[in-house]
Image 1: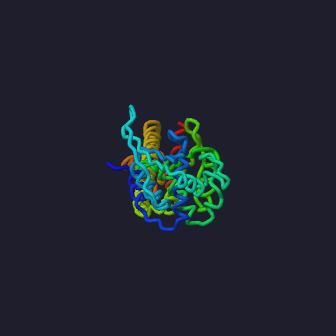
Image 2: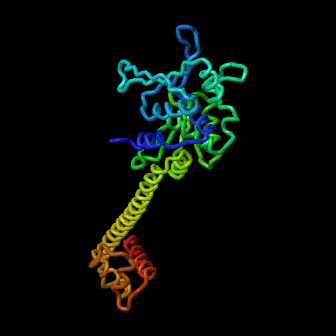
Length: 312
């Protein structure tokens, strides 16, 4: 069965994105998580993306072709202990590699390489659509959303502290609260509120997943209300039953020690009714009197009975 997170990534991997600036932003975020630079046997610079996720590599291949006009070289290597082969996309042509690294923000205009874990250049994220694309790429490459039927939790793994702070700031720019934690030394930006995750899905363009998320959220909310109401009513019933048994024990004590006939008529009538109906509430007990008596009146008389029993 496909997980909610995998289903979302599969849908995003084929999402149409036309503006080149959005494609650059999305690929930059992907590369920050799964990209690296390497050298071939002739000491020429290579741009490499590696992942076990087919939807991620499908998306990366599309973006690379769209931005460079060239098809990247593809490799698949199955490592020991891995469930799926590691897929690689390699860009080899020197001019293309340099231009791509500069456009994605990993090389300065002077040809100096920047760390992939460094924050993206501001120019790459000037437009709102590019910020949405950047977050989409970060989720595709290193994101996760738990099945909403189980829990509300979404996270983005960051390649460094600067990247984590950057993603948190971008999320806040869309009004999405998030926090940063660390798992085995890796910074993780996470969201726990259902509304925040729903907004995040909307921001990255996962409209179908957002609809499913909202459906589950509504059902869970209704179920939660029903459970709370049932628990409240159960607690009230238990409270009423416990109080009724305490009152019955007190009345039996009076009956043994001095007899109910020696009570004032108003108290005797309430005491006899309580013995006949040990499980009903005070309000229901009052309706059995002729004339009926309100809850506060019944409670007042029952307190007097309890005081008499305590004295005995």
